[in-house]
Structures are given as structure tokens and as C-alpha cells.
Length: 181
Image (cartoon, rainbow, N blue to C red; front, side, top):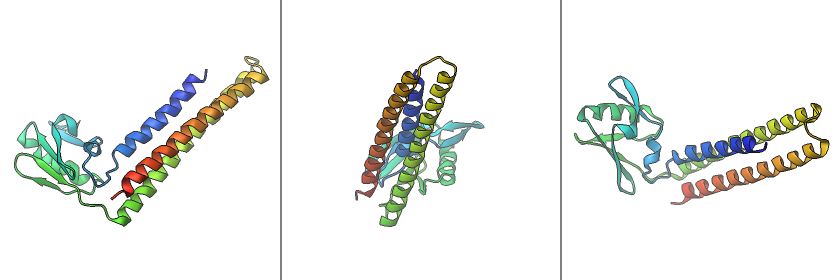
């Protein structure tokens, strides 16, 4: 019975981790391109499906499209995104250079990381509330006893604590990564 609620908590944590993977830390990380789409024959297509993405140096990403006609579309997609990067086109590929993050920008990113982490903790606590409501309804319907309800609520609280701690750890790790020069 607890499995469905734990699955929701796991999904919340996975969602946070995927969001964190798109936050750039001054180093080139191809995951920042995961959310970007490129118009390919009129269809929005994920960036990874229109070319080869490589990281030749710590602060550079090179996107080499399968078709040269996509260079302009790739540039447009990057410019319209919130990445804050300016693409360079050398005629064969699009090059993204990552500038060193300023102290102020790092602090802003850490604030954003903490905000996303707090939202995930709220989502996990909402799952706990839903679980507790579910067990109260079962008690009213005489499907479980009061002792069983209390037992389930304790188990849900332990799960909640476990996943909130995991979120705290994720926040701490990502914040350290961002603040490391």
C-alpha cells in the first residue's frame, strides 16, 4: 500500500535531479541542451536528435548537425532559450563557450537551486498528506484498524523524512558544485 506513495516521492526527487542537471556550473555540460528543441522539417525535435554533441574542452560544447541546413535553427533555439549563451557558427558546427560564472551569478544560481529543492520538499510533503488522508478514509470505511492506520502514518513519515533528507543532500551537493570556482 505504501509503494504508490513512495513512487510519487521518488518521481519528485528524480524531477529535481533532472532540473539540477540542466543548471550550468561554469563547466560545459551537454545536459543543459536537454530541454531545447530545434525546428526540423516543421517538427520541434530534441537537440540531441539533430546532431552530434561533444565537449572537446571543459568550457566548450560543439554541436555538429547531421544536416548543414540546421545550423541556423540550432543557433535560433539556443538564442531563444534562457541559457544565456551566445552560439558561434563556424559553417560546420555551432560552438558554445561557457564564460566563468561571476560570484553574483553563482549566488543567484544557488538561490534558484534552493527554491527548486524547497518546491520538491513541498511536493513530497503533499504526498505524505495524501497518504495520510488515504489511510484515514480506509479507517472510516473500517478497512483497517486504528493501530494499522497509526502504523502506516509512521511509515509514511519515515519515508517522507528519508526523501526530504535526500533533497537536502541534493541541494547541498549542487550548491557546492556551483560555488566551487
